[in-house]
Length: 476
Image 1 (cartoon, rainbow, N blue to C red):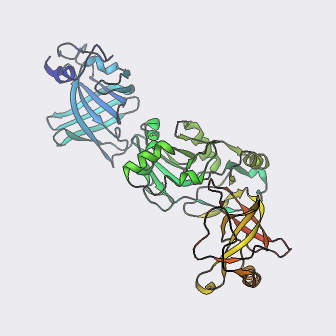
Image 2 (cartoon, rainbow, N blue to C red; image 1 turned 180 degrees about the vertical axis):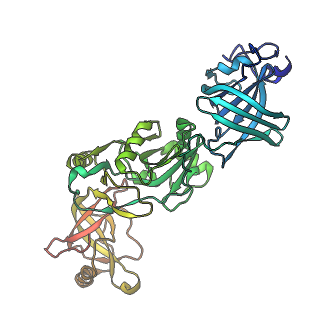
Image 3 (tube, rainbow, N blue to C red; image 1 turned 90 degrees about the horizontal axis):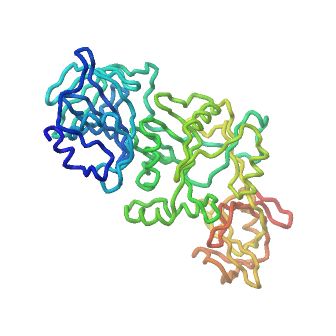
């Protein structure tokens, strides 16, 4: 068995399509001028990695490279020295069945020949001649079976740019109307989730929140995005969303996944509330920094990647056609649309006028049944309203409204509500109002806008529009 003893010991060849290999023999080179071969195989095992193999003395000397062979000489990658493989393995591609050693899909990532510059027990230096890999590489031992692989030559692509390490997401300005001219903008649906920049490198995925916090551990189902992209390096911008029973994004659902740190809690909630990553921008693509590139080109490149997995996708967008897109968002009961100028670059951290958010809102009359005091200089005065509605003879509490007021409006409400004060709550159904509430006789009616009703019967993102007796609202 010789060199292949360990390889054959780990495998049951009745159950796996991998070649068994015979006795270790010298490499079948036709002549002195024929170069030895190499292969890199992409291996979707329990953890994605790449197997780097060099033909040597009748076998394939092998290393498992978790992050792939580095394209940039500024980065070294771990390469774990594993057992020699038979020469027949150089062409192997297929599925290793579950229950077998190394179970998972194996595909050929690169093949070619190489020249040996140095071969020592703790250092191997070669020149690769492959379709993807060309140039000088060195593998050197660091500790035990752990080696490192390093590209010695400059990048094969001289225009290659480094991946940005941290990108602060670009933000949008709120707009009441669609922009003009319509044809100058691209339109996307607005997703009711949390913003996340995703970094994919060597098959590994890192999620970064809007405030630059690493939130990767909270969404384990998104790790598979790295396996889909393989060795492709990318920085994506998008939103993590959770869907309700009707298949619509639900921020209320997503809140059950936010802020979790316990692995057990995350795993439990992951089964009950799976998430989906909506990738709507591409900021870096395999050596190309796209931050300064127009939005239309970034979208074109993003769609070419064809992200479409169980937990991630690239949602549609439309160049022009804003009215139709906004109407579709209303019909599907989505939050609204984003309008992005087609020729605009990405502006990290900026709330740019190149991106506009146009929201859909429901409007409804509610009766004011109380208020809570403001803070600071508004201590002792109206700060937020408690509202409800009549149903079957009951006064149902619908929630607290703390936005949409100008100082003038709050002063006006203060004058109108204080004479109506009462000692007990007028609300007879629904959730309990805040403990610090001041209650009033339910006589004043106001117009309010809001995003949606929560499952608990509360208003989500409500804002005051005005009083129904004709008195205006403020800054809704």
